Length: 460
Ligand SMILES: *Cc1c(COP(=O)(O)O)cnc(C)c1O
Image 1 (spheres, rainbow, N blue to C red):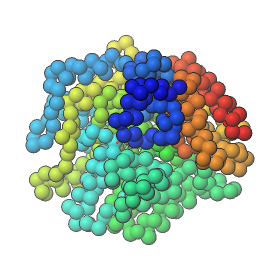
Image 2: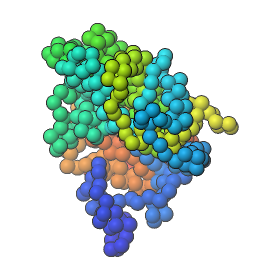
Image 3: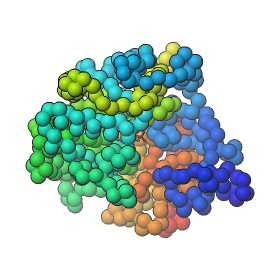
Image 4: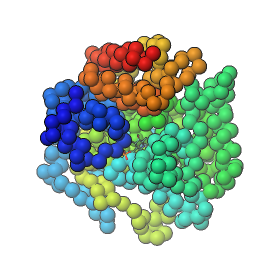
């Protein structure tokens, strides 16, 4: 397993690379998997071992690891104009075209786009935009941000403050004024004998009470992922957005849909907000915006926020914010190709979103089959994102003791069988690439089932 020779890739990885979001005891035990390349949805390590990556890299490599059109779009743009910024009244032609395209494929009638290098920076940028609006519109106290527990919005100081995960306490986060509401996960958060409708209503009451307690005029915005991703693939309870959106509207609080995972087809719809039939005031995009072929994020503003931000900027003659690589021409060229590949189709190839919808029944059936296991408490998901939640006792949803690291064990056993999937809390997350075939979906579930059986046999 772990190559212990002094100059091994594993030893070299440990020696000079500082790991983030990595279970260090596991790595010490097993060694880092050092990868060299990929083919379709598979990746290969330095020892020549092949893995089916059931997580599309980090949700983002949805067109696989060797898509010729995406690589060619990048190469052509590198040859033509390899880099430029978007400051001081200059920007690349690719940037102009991508903004037009993003507004065209967005749910908005008009709007504007601002670019970043990542999803975290896009959320950070959106918060600064809302703070800027508050200052400009004479409401400087309107600064608080509402999100939900278990939400994942990124790792910068602001987006980590929005993220509702306990691990951020090691940084002394969240910052003041970041408020985390209850996670709308009916299976886990619903009270005994509470119906799903009553649970959803309770989420609305909590929101309204929070607004009353904090003061509506102190709240700058509400951010939500349509389906929570890194929180463990948690679809909202039935009617959740239909309950919270009118409340936000009533108090004039902008709703930001963080579509970094859901956007561009993951749920089977172009946007998660379309899957759940609500209209946000802005969309945050990243990850599959470029199918993972270039680091890029975008804030897509709907028409109302566009007008207000434009007025605020006009008043001081600029919006003083931007990154050196905002609107990078190679990123924009790749994103234009990615949108074609995902949503529009290229010559000879239908749009990949069609394959998401074609694969979803097999994906859901696979999840449902494994949910019959005595130690799987819940199978959940939407489109091609899913999770299986391990439980010690299915009847009362008791989790395994945390020191058993059950999901870590499952994921490690999967790796041994040539399958990469992600442990999250006590759940295992699956978010396959949109290019997968039914045979590859079947391979994924077979390998996962083998791993589940092995681990549960060991633990019980
Ligand atoms: C991944 C993610 C982010 C952060 O994006 P980075 O590019 O890692 O900064 C933000 N929001 C959601 C919903 C994400 O899944």
